[in-house]
Image (tube, rainbow, N blue to C red; front, side, top):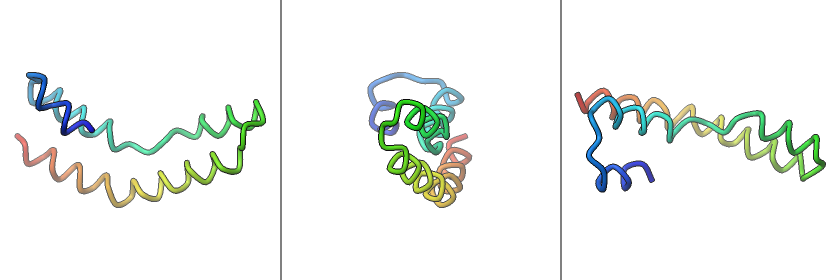
Length: 71
């Protein structure tokens, strides 16, 4: 999504790099805490957060490599 948005806006290189990095960060554990507090499928939310964190182990290094090539 960030790669599509960047085509429509004129970002400086640093802002572009930050946008790419923030877009591939894993979901926050706070989502699970809130789901548990309000009893809104906390097991499902915990699974989503776990899958997102595991996925970030693979996606984040690729994104970092891409961002470092932009210089």
